[in-house]
Length: 378
Image (cartoon, rainbow, N blue to C red; front, side):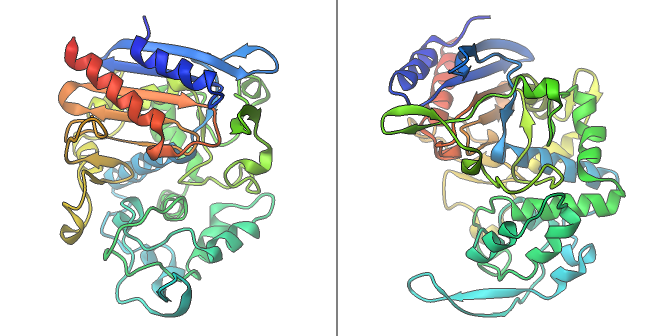
């Protein structure tokens, strides 16, 4: 299978500018791969080329897997999207909202007027962000810490806003809470639930929070651009570098390969089914891939939040090349994927760079544009 030449040239250009070490991508339509390629290196010093089975860090592309796990728990009758979080974690029954001055500094707090619902955790309307207080919680993390240890402490952090009155990206906390609820209602450790209901049925054997010694050999070195050079990133430059693999973060931390993640994307593209295995119902996928924001927050942009994914509502080339109804998400290490249900199309991009911008990365938009150009001209 050949690569997408226009995008290959773009990637090579970024490599020449020392902006990235390598990248891989897979594009499929109607269940058939139409473009795929790997360029660059997983380990520059060792001369090790990036391959389709190279293991990468997902960062926020962990979130859609968490969303799928919550939807599976819902299908099993274990929870409802409209359930209050406090039903499962009592600490969330008494929350406060921060009061800010004109400079954005917290000047006080007051009790919330409403509860946080499970739906709010997945569509970024919970009010739980990444404040300085949150950073202190993660700073106090210790080896062996678990969701059960840390998540109740999140209730002590003032919300950025009243639930459902605004939408602001929750980097990991909201999704961690969702994972903890899955643990409580299923009676299973979160990763075990994820493996049983999603990863194993899809054959995603290289997707995990911790790697085996053999898998470690396939793990890509992370890089960033520094003074015009591409250099290896230090461990402390990675997301939640002080948190050990016992903490199954819902918004980051998973490892995977592009082959594994393409199976997940194919499942969503197929309405919840892949390779004869039914993972989610079509209704669950439709809920994930539809705007989930309160009515008052809709219609304010060309994309909105579904449940753990962004949903395209308006096409505005060249910056927004995707069709309305397309959905997907990105990671801070410049991993990216999107699905266009109307075209039976999915596309996945992996990179090993720590200095990326996630959904706002130039490469992500270039990938969307070149894929859509190629598909529309076929």
